[in-house]
Length: 123
Image (cartoon, rainbow, N blue to C red):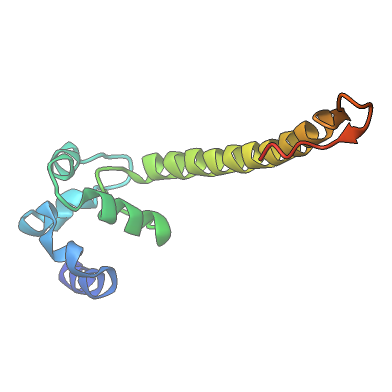
């Protein structure tokens, strides 16, 4: 079963899947029983060249089982929430920056020396 899963993963994920440190390890280590964590799998992942694409694959495909990119399912869920929060913060900051830019344009509308209103483009 795990051999078939490995073949499907390599076909779907691309070349990185076959070059991971886990390719030379017992697949059972990366799929611990419920409530257990495989410290060996986490250690193997920590030295792996393809840790990042492995983790991204798991995140994009909502992998619920196993250790991927050195993270457990719980850790991947937490990372996903942190990323979503950061995305919301970035969107809010972009919105705030645009609003401040409009406010600055209004503020720099001032009277020039001759008493005329002028707008200074400050972008």
